[in-house]
Amino acid sequence: MCMELFSEKHPGSRQKRGIKLVIVVFIAALLILTLYSNTILTMNLPRVWTEEGRSDPLLQQYNGSGLLKPISEVKLTNRSGWIVKEVLIKEGDRVKKGQTLVVYDSRDTESTIQSEQANLSKQKLMIEGLQEQFIAATQSEDELSIRSAKRAIQAARLDLSVQEQKISNLQADLESFKTIVAPFDGYISKVSAMTGLPSGSEGSDVIVTNSSLGFQFNLHIPYSIAEQMELGSTLEVDIKKNKVTRSVEGKIVGIETVVSDSQTLPTGELENRTSSQLTLKQVVIAVQSPELKGGEQANVSLSKSSENDEGMLLPLKAIHGHGDNKYIFVLEEKQGPLGNTYHANKVNVTLGESNEADVIVLEGAFPGQSIITESSEPIQDGDRVRKR
Image (cartoon, rainbow, N blue to C red; front, top):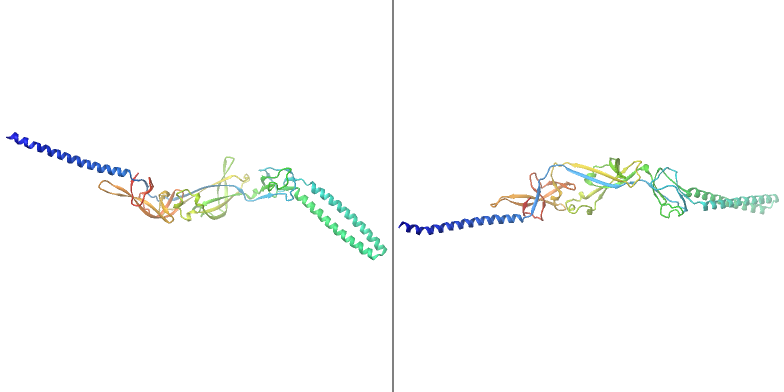
């Protein structure tokens, strides 16, 4: 009797255990699928990189270079167009005031002067003959002959005066045009005169640089750095010549506000700059040194540390938007039944000064925030993201 009862209960017990096992496996499978699907979803989310804002000061740095140009140079040419006879200098030569640079062929003018001087002598002899005629007329007391002789003498003297002035002008031209001399101490920056060719065939015959006045170069410096510069102030300039660099003192001789060409800014940075940040200062810097000749490369390195008492320092790449509508994405962590999730929240910001890498955020960023600086793909406000 007992054996029969056991055999009747046994099949039902086995069936219940089987059902329980199926339920357990089903629930486990649901849990695994749920967790796995969440992992797959997370893996497909945009990846983001974050940084916290810093209270460090903003360091403005500028490195610029330009070619030295003479402050004063003179182009010399023989205005008469005479043929070049001899060139006594070459480019790069240092010269003294009054030194002969080029000699011109003056034979034609010299020959003309000799001919005109012979004509002058003839006119003097003619006046002597007229004076003799006047004396004879006076002795004969012939009034008509006397008046005629006087007029002839006056006309001859006028012709003599004109001839003397003509010779004087020719002699002045000979003195002025037979050579070119250095107008001041300096050096020869260019020689175009060629023996046998007329003066001015290649433009100016000689260009002389006044080395005593020094050299200058221009730089376009960001307004944020240049705003503290003043006319007459000095700074260090590195001059590179023949692969050797040495430092000389430069003096600021000109400051002018200009607007930068937006094309010169790297792509992606223009939209993060305000109109004031696109303003530059053209600074003219003068240097003096007896060893300079012009054409050397001048380099200037400047830096400025801006106080950051009112904002957070962030990478420039964390800023989005155009014009005055700037914003950042702040990473927000939310708790959920399947784990924490991360979301990108858009926050409007107000910007201060910036350099090539960082910007001061005056409003909208706070200590401890995780600011999204980069993302693997474009994101929008509220998007769920994956933190790197």
